[in-house]
Image 1 (tube, rainbow, N blue to C red):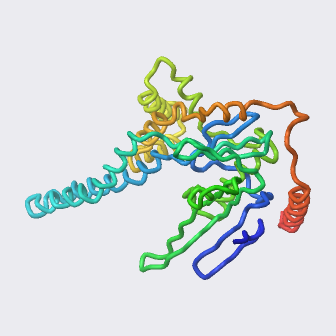
Image 2 (image 1 turned 120 degrees about the vertical axis):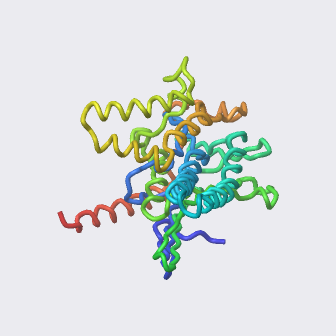
Image 3 (image 1 turned 60 degrees about the horizontal axis):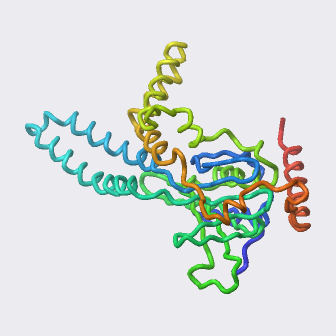
Length: 323
């Protein structure tokens, strides 16, 4: 099945697909790690993971708070029976997702995908201990966005999908393709997330945004419990903003703690990813070592031409935009 050309957009009534690779040409968006998917980064490789226990907490927490608030304000209705019924219903509705969340805390974190910019290859680890080394320019990427309309209004969801093909022509059918989906909303947000990988591979480490450094977090909190260290840092952040009379920033941190459980989400995320899992296969360790500059892999002529064409298009668009 042929893959649409990068830069192609297909729109329908309630959906939109933006095809970003191959070939990996600029999207025009700035790199932005909206989901904290960057786990390691250096001049040789970039590790990208798809594990976010913190996001699950911040989705479940508002539901718990909603039922607790409803139970509190209805405690005087029907001698408290109605409030009790709300608590029971809330326990059932949130209890099952909470069990899945707790189960996820005791599972091993999936290994990351490693992008090697010096070799222009991508290491895709598999569950059976095997791995692929796929050419960077063969990676596919698409930003998908779907909308639904109901009485509550229009609801839009989307994600970034990155696909990898096994270069082994003799691979079994169930081991030929692998894909990752990042629930980032699609559209320009997905493009900005994809730019973290594309810009790193095509430009360099310096273009990446500041992101969570999970290895540095453990080093910084050495001698302290990482779990509670993150919580203390969150509280200190609120105190510092209040001491500096930055009321708005302090208020946002308080709202994040009360309505979204941000401290707990950050604590669990740091606990599971400090440090993040490493690719320990001897061949991958050797593959991840730096190369002399003269041995670095180069772009293909096709990608050079495609990037030059895309950059010219983006420059023309910027010139047409009103100042």
